[in-house]
View 1 (cartoon, rainbow, N blue to C red):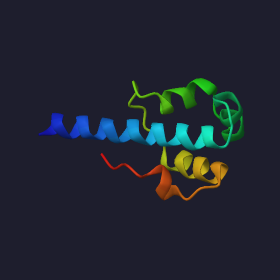
View 2 (view 1 turned 90 degrees about the horizontal axis):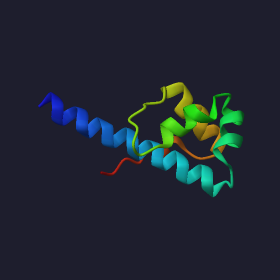
View 3 (view 1 turned 45 degrees about the horizontal axis):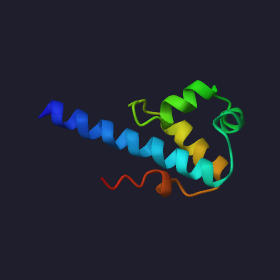
View 4 (view 1 turned 60 degrees about the vertical axis):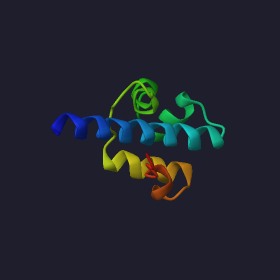
Length: 81
């Protein structure tokens, strides 16, 4: 049961990262540009957006991302799996 929940959590983090990448690209921003706006490194942003990573950003960073992208946080958190 615990292993199954971890796998599901991983998919949710992957989807969150994909959503961030999608809306960033819609704004025409590179990872480097967007990371600078957020005050984080490009490698940190890359690890969040990568479908091969399960890196979970903090809630504070997710809120900062939604503000920077000028979208409601619910769009980032649309994790229909």
